[in-house]
Length: 102
Image (cartoon, rainbow, N blue to C red; front, top):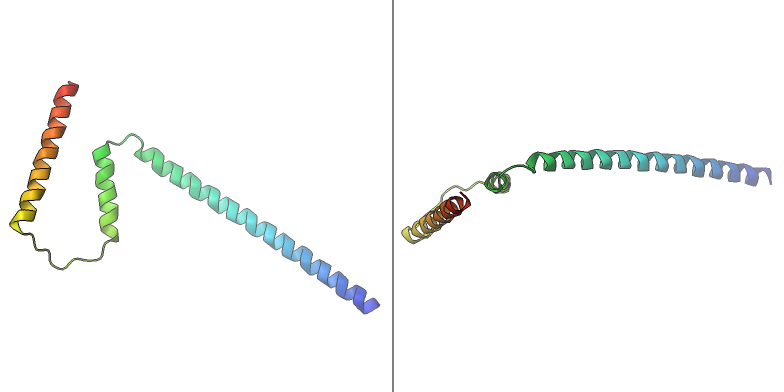
């Protein structure tokens, strides 16, 4: 009976220690999560007043950093023409919007 009591006491002590370690781990995780959330909020606040085109450029730069290295790019005339047409029409649209805003 004494050995059963001792085993029960040891098991309870082990369970208490495990609960304490688990509670400490939960608190650590909460602190890390709160710090990450604060960091993300600070990043978003820094971007809040930026122009949309700047945000787009930053997003493209981030995206480009995730791409694998490209050894060679072949641009055919039809691709270049299409890209230039889009660029010109986007510039004209932005210029018209700026003129109408004035």
